[in-house]
Length: 498
Image (cartoon, rainbow, N blue to C red; front, side, top):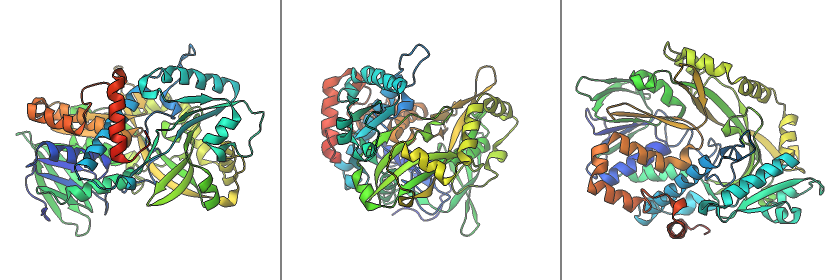
């Protein structure tokens, strides 16, 4: 049985009970069965922030339909490098989840993943030209070989009937279609993983516990002070390795760790809202994730999409997200999060990033000022016949975009995830947002290489890693036959379309 009290010494401390910590914890337990891990979460249950289905702006990111992963260059060409990397990473995640199912660590894949087509949809001559170039560039690669393209309204009606209903028959538009897309409920998956972990010897999970201090001692170990939010009691534990995967709460903890590698990092919080459909007839008309092009200056989490999801066993239909600004770093955070994160070592990068991203600031101001009618006007670009009485506004989660210092000392706003690792490998901190959860498995494989390098090189760990990820160390896009084999196996295990 797991310990019910905080132990004074442990092998690993994980901060935050989201998909990142769940994945790393499970990998480490499989690689080293006798490992001792303590997990601390400030809320009262797992996956309550970024990993929760209602808070996660994009589910099942595999780069099939997200247009922001394939930017158009000034010369008119389309850069697909990021899309290829994300698609590869998602295949790694699928393999890891299949391993969990096959080994019985997680049961019933229908609770967290299902097949759903991924569609990109644009209108206007320039956008149609862009989508065609994107399709031609992607479809030439094995990862995207099944992608279809069409400017035919009748074909598009088959792919997304709700989106085409009431649309001008003379509108110039185009869409791409990937049948093998997925919808992933990362909240459900995370909780299933923790349900397994908490029953394993040496694993302890403490909810309503907040990490207050981190300090590395002369012997290399970390001394961590934790406060029980129910009793206000403080406890101390020591460990040779700490992972901070606390979503928007990671930046303040990185600052408390006082490591040189963390100097210059800041965060820019972006909040979000959904329009959620309440009309069951409308919900049943749509079965796809349909992504469009983001507005100029919009952050990646704000790419508009009309999204069919399964949440807690119920089919839902969402549109958005609409971006906003809040100084909170977490949905359950404090309005002082942003001002308290400004330190002497990051004030210049943060001010510089703000100055060089004025279009983002204008975009967020415009979003905050939107009325209900404004939001419905945006929705009707995707669902022409949408009625106001069928949709209600819901708050989504908080994202903290990474600000980092460049070689000149100025700040760069990064749209993605960033792992900050101490040189000795004793501390790793995950910052940022999209694509995040969908690429967790590959992020954690890289972290294991950085932070457990000697063990990672061992024959035992290499063998076990290949059991978890059969394609480990191989680029699937370069091996079409292996890609086909992997997709068949994972589709069977996860009960997905292939």
